[in-house]
Image 1 (tube, one colour):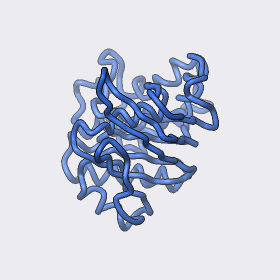
Image 2 (cartoon, rainbow, N blue to C red; image 1 turned 180 degrees about the vertical axis):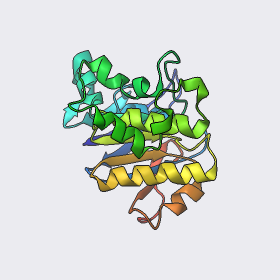
Image 3 (cartoon, rainbow, N blue to C red; image 1 turned 135 degrees about the horizontal axis):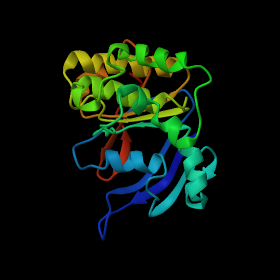
Length: 224
């Protein structure tokens, strides 16, 4: 689905990531760890075409990322849901409208309005559907961001520090939702520095732990 082959990327004259090879297979679950500034967010952006590798090859659904046109990239991103570390919303729209925004932008609509209601219920935001983003707690914002990321039924979900700004109970709740998505066949990649979160996944899902160190990605052990 998504594959990096000997990929390098740098800002300016420096190299942040070097000779990285990584494959996100259908239905797989990965954690990406590493210290702040190691390049976790950059690697995520390479995985959904936001950045183009300085060297090497990135393949997105069997297509070379370098050869994708602007329209091609838009099509690819419909198959990849992204939960950003700092989730941004349009404050003049309510929660339901923000969650449905990817559909609005792409000119699509739900075949059944109940699908949106079911999605909001799944993330526990039915009662907040008419609230504006400034009225939400940190955990509610993260759950809304996850709902928005999956409303297009993507094949892959990339979550960049999704639990970084929430308490432990909410972290476990978000992890449970991501595990449920994986059981539905979605490919999951979570960037996190929280090793307790990774340990808590042990009883729920078989996952590969990847670690960015010395500008490259290393397998940090066997399957959890």
